[in-house]
Image (cartoon, rainbow, N blue to C red; front, top):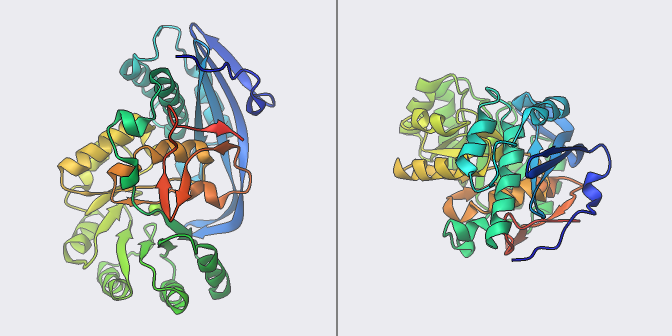
Length: 360
Ligand code: MG
């Protein structure tokens, strides 16, 4: 199979660090995503997100990856670039030594999950290109089975909320950020203008379980289909108590980062929210989805504000999940990749090898 040499790559000219490691070459550069709207959730507001873009070359073929670092992950341009400088792939002469390569990368530090995800995504893109197949096909998923993706509406004034609902016209399901004392206003404002199904992301904002259960009933009566991270992740018993009584499912987000957390969430939540930046990438995300299914839990696939690179990687897994929240690239003004598309509110993974992205 022949893939044109992509060497003159406009993405990796400025601020780029290039490292040759045996048969592999890694390019990486910091980049800053500009959000279309100031984005407010229960823990704060922001208008930009730092990311690091990577390209892993092997035998004339290139795979793209991305690390996205929202503040709560605790990673930054500096920490990701520092992590990448520690990676050494000279001991590996074949990218299909995937398990060993990713175990080596994971073993370099305790955390740095976004930095690890950038490499995992680039490696998967490279492997898919070497096999000539997109990952949703390698995994055996039917891309037409992807669920509708939600469009996120941050906590804001009634006027801005109405404007955002109008902007979300192509989407069949809206994700509403809750968890402050404006929850009822947010829902009532949205219900004045649309009857689309809603999901609610509380981002650990509810502290009292009785009040949380009252809100769960109030929201269910208004067409909310599930509650994401209703109470703080440390209040495990309260989340379990709520899950047992809530008329709608609960989904663990902040409480579930990696594969080992799925077992702990079982019994305390109805489902899990998988995000590549939390779980170190596609390999572990796929394992988490399979384990959650085996435990009869719901599976949601989420994202950070990311370019179409990381979103197209996540889109490969979308046909295997119940709910997708993959609007991250739609919330930014300076996407540098082309890849997955939204058609009639559904995420369509690109029909191209690897994660299926190209540089804009
Ligand atoms: Mg969430």
